[in-house]
Length: 474
Picture 1: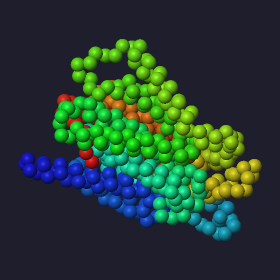
Picture 2 (picture 1 turned 120 degrees about the horizontal axis):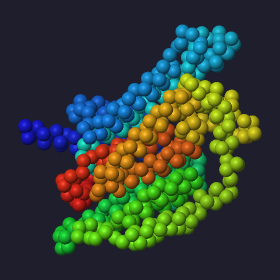
Picture 3 (picture 1 turned 90 degrees about the horizontal axis):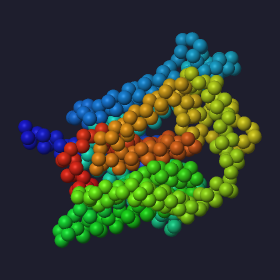
Picture 4 (picture 1 turned 45 degrees about the vertical axis):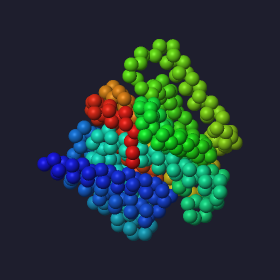
């Protein structure tokens, strides 16, 4: 019986490593926006999900979140499929089908104006959800959840180093192909600077957490022990990776990405500074005035970083005001399209086709908008009223999870705040860009979120606290 349990735990560890590797690989080849990497990521993640579900069953501590996520996956993919079905009557069908019947004799009628594209979009919805569910199945302990976060954080740091070297030495190359856009901006392994900025912003928060953990572990390590020097070396490596993530973020020149990261930093960094003590044993609580001084100093430091290092993004914002940005010029047209199809939507993946009829000529004739540059509006247009309902439900569940985690976790409370700050970062940037619609980043963030949720809902105990005092290896 004992040997079977040990083998089961070893198998879970192996699958967890594969899960981390797959989440990382999905991000690297241009964010998996091309068919082959996306198909590889989808097949791999679905196989992992099936294997994990069969071997380990429904998770214990995160069962409620798992059930809600599974419910949302079924509802959203089911509705997307329904949008492609030929309807017996035209009362729910898109009016465009009436015009097609009159002009070309087309007899087909559906909610989606492009059923084939909508059907193909089901995988784009399902992949992040399946990644999140698989992460919940595998992260049954704090140790495993922290392994996921450590792997993702180190990956972000390595990608940032690669991006810096590529930007400095080969600015016209994107991985192995010629770079055709954003030549003045660092995009790392992604096609556009905005997705790179969201990724690097999340990576900065992750590496900041890893630096905090490794310095705490070093300060608690007994002097004279042989592993102390190795721990010091890892501390410096983590600090360098943190600096690389931050520098790469600044060189992305993404105004919204940098701003969203600094908002997240204002949530996370001050609390982290106040609670940075290497060991809390035998220490009296700090006076209130000292905590307030640390808080104000941390806020001032974040603002100073923004002022000093975000000069290129600030210059872009000054040179190109909001009223001159095409993304904001097209918003009224998107709202008109939504108001005409708010109930059922026009079909997921049909934005490019539908929006062309609503585009304001005053926005110019240059450029083709195949995305709304707003995750929420594009989802509303594609799926109808179901999308905002699902979004509100998802944010409500996450808010409750973070609240519970902050109330119940002690030594790992900074991971709860990390999850909250990262979610604010991603949610803010999603209002003006489409990072969540890039499969590579969506999978990366879903894996991150599954680990954070597992920590938030985990039970704090002495064993977990002892494990926290030891440095993690990946």
